[in-house]
Image (cartoon, rainbow, N blue to C red):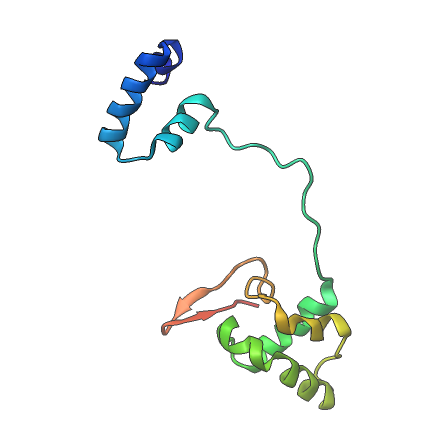
Length: 127
């Protein structure tokens, strides 16, 4: 279909788009994008660097373990409180970047790149 679309005149392209729109239930703009461009994924020019260092990841891992790996939505409001509590008992060190985590989503940081698996209806982050 793509070969026919690329060789067709403007009027024929409109008819082909009408036909494809009816068959696929996709919008015209999506079909034009699919017909005109390449479907291969583009390589990222520059890889993203790590936002936080190992001290923050280690702290989050300890805090997550102390809460028995509760979900990130439940953990986030209690993050600063538990960090200071564990620091008071000598379990972890509190660093300013760790305390800044209270306003960020971090459910992917507590694990080793694995967002977690479902157990008992809860998302658990693997250490």
